[in-house]
Image (cartoon, rainbow over all chains, first blue to last red; front, side):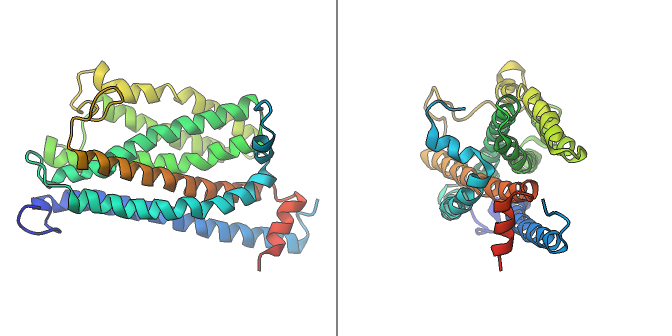
Length: 56
Length: 249
């Protein structure tokens, strides 16, 4: 690493960290969104089941 | 169907695949996280500063893997969509639907990171070059497949329509891949070829490879998580699915 240290990225900090930061946040949020969707699916199907709407 | 594939075709039913996918998730998630951390360390710390591009070239360690994944996931999605259309296995269409959003995300990441590399290196965020344009078309194809499926209420008709679009759109993948050879573009040619030794340092090569495997493993995690949601939603009338819902505290 040339002078300025790790976070400085040799003067390209804006570009390097925008690229890495957005990638990390998006990949993380995708997993979070999927775990939330899973909980929502269970909530909805449980409610349907309780009300007997979806009984075959 | 796969001839003689008794043990394989057993998992072609959503009821059997749902628990299998659940059991498989940690086996992909843990190595994905470990390799992701290793890849980040290799790309951001261990790899030396490039003598021409400075530290901006470190963007390549996520840009190239994301671009590869965007094309690879499209091919996998199209294969599942094709199986769903021809063999009419329900799980195939569900897998195609489960892969599309992850593929779209990797396509966006490839475009985003490319843009943040292009600005300091080319002096522009965007140019209508063949490689960039065909990758943008890939993003629109993914979004089209997702939107088409979402717009049709009947799941089987939604599978057919979006599956057809996914299949037709696959012609775009070789166009992306060969665009840097077919047209005289600003985007550089492939740095890593199957047929020749890599034209870069070993640490760069391995950083990209490790990150690619990490992204690839992550795509299994997200596809399995998503397909489990889709299976439960679509099979909610089946007895096994109601049991799964009831048994959850």
